[in-house]
Image (tube, rainbow, N blue to C red; front, side, top):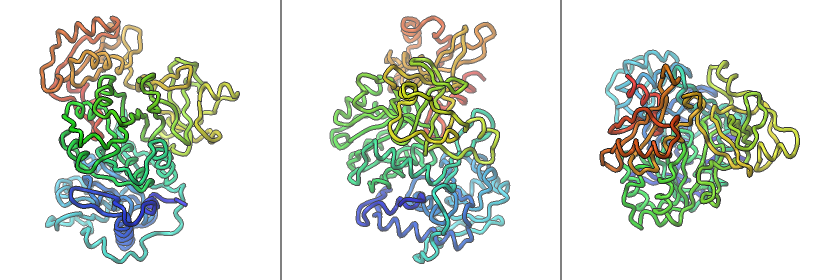
Length: 532
């Protein structure tokens, strides 16, 4: 029986490869030993059950070991995006009252001026070479000292699946990042559900491109461990590196966000790099149709999985590959062990094609936001299922199981609709929707038309204040594959293919569109860049 996150390391055969980073590969047996040793080290430092331990590392074997060891020691994992800067790391450390930080000497040196703000922080565990910087009142421990062979006392008794396992920090629409609190049950149920519909087996080789601090990136780790598969870690730098690693490791599974897929389809893919791929999956936004078509041409034997999820529930929906040709715009239906509703503000189910908010119910729904009861109450609140069987089929189209308790729901803030067959279609974020000329416009509708012209490499639409229209639409683009963007021809194509109220008032060409730490387009930063 799986109770805690670290129980996943028991799933794989001892002699099979578990993790690879660069030229190092360790087996499941070695991974279990390293996790036990690191957990014992954390216990010797005095880390107690429920205390928060931050892991601020680029992807490497030690990152995975440390993350699982925190769970084995009974503490709470707080993964931090490796691209985060010192003020952001300090903010998280203060917000969750972290008592320990696992990082490298190089990163520690850059944080010396900010870390004193984190008054609860006691221990710094440094991975890599010895650090000659002053301790600053913290107890410094080298990773090699922490991970001795003595694994006695590596686990703590009394931890159950309902206890907090991790806090994932994600950007909020206002203020600083918000910490999404996840239980062991959330993570384990998510691993089983996603591994099931992706068909993961121990024969799979999964390329980990997304950050482990990103819910979809961490899900790649947990689903790989659940299936006893082989996970190859990479710190993404250039798209050609992904191509090279797919060939070297005979990768069978690859999940990316749309901006990365757009880059990857522009790369040459020799047969040796693409022939082993069993599936490719998209998350973190709608994939342009043109990009999907090119991917299917590059990977003709691979199944495409179009997915939707949110940090507050990890994954929510996926489109069965058999439906991609007939419903390429759909995000599919609920994943196993989840209910997905599309509802009006009062919680009543929407009719087919009526826009409403996505509500996720079930075992994957997080516990709430760390230290933020007000925001938790806004997003995590009851949503009763429809009463009649016909209403239930129409609004939920549940894949399995009985309804979960009505309080176990998260209101996503995402707008969608269902067709008459129950398939979901993403419309946009409620806070990304553009209100112009009395209409509500989804940015993705404008972006899809821009991509279809073939005149842009990347495209993001957003609204800016307009005294007459409420908002007018701005389209920020890059040129296709290193070329300049012909804005005059693009504007004519948009005028041709969009109704007047949906046409951008301005087209702004940039060398690169800004991204968040998770690789998604950063609409807030882009809006500031364009408007300031």
